[in-house]
Image 1 (cartoon, rainbow, N blue to C red):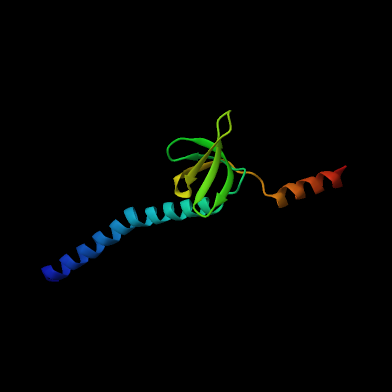
Image 2 (cartoon, rainbow, N blue to C red):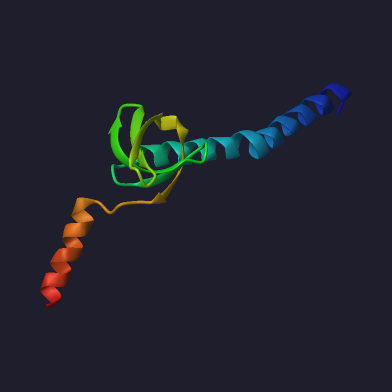
Length: 106
């Protein structure tokens, strides 16, 4: 093989390693964040990226209304500012299923 072929092979291997170590993990993190933001519902307890803890009261498009603190202060934040979900509220269907099972057992 001549030096040009070796250089091309090294370049392809370098790009492959770059993709596997940097781009692919970032795409996975982005996908998880999009799924988390899509799963937000009123009643969920969250933490923002700036460290504010609160409970979701309302979600409209890209704006979330949070209730924070003992004084129940309401904050409006951008949806992208949500850092994570602390406590996910169960959906109404899950709650009604649990209640039906309790009634059946009694």
